[in-house]
Length: 147
Image (tube, rainbow, N blue to C red; front, side, top):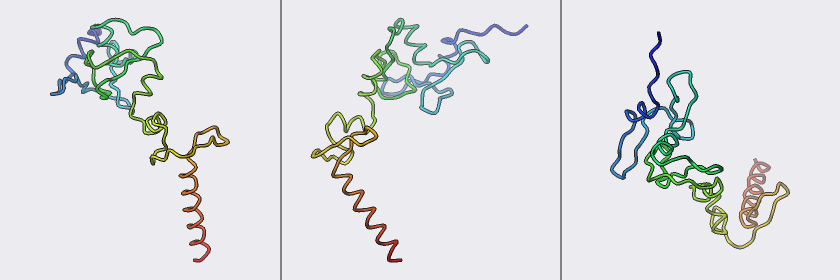
């Protein structure tokens, strides 16, 4: 007879490491984005995110339509005090994505604030950066033609 699977939270406690800054780091398997993953009832069972499991067991259910934001910016952290339920858009705005930060600041990635336009593909682009790219490309074409 196969052994009965232990509670996933019970298995999870052995895979947490507390850091000096208070994070409870999951030391088990992580997905390519850096989030921990653990089987809900042993091998062959659905996979769950440890930070969600800990939050739901120690704090309560995650409200419908919300996701957990890691306030510490560490995706492997399971410390409930470092997690906050927010909308997906709020989580994106709080993130470290350079494009989002530049857009919120009203600049491009290089810090230009002068002149933006919407490309035919529907993307917001900086005219100064576009001119620099065109000059650089023209210079490369001249070099190729002179070779």
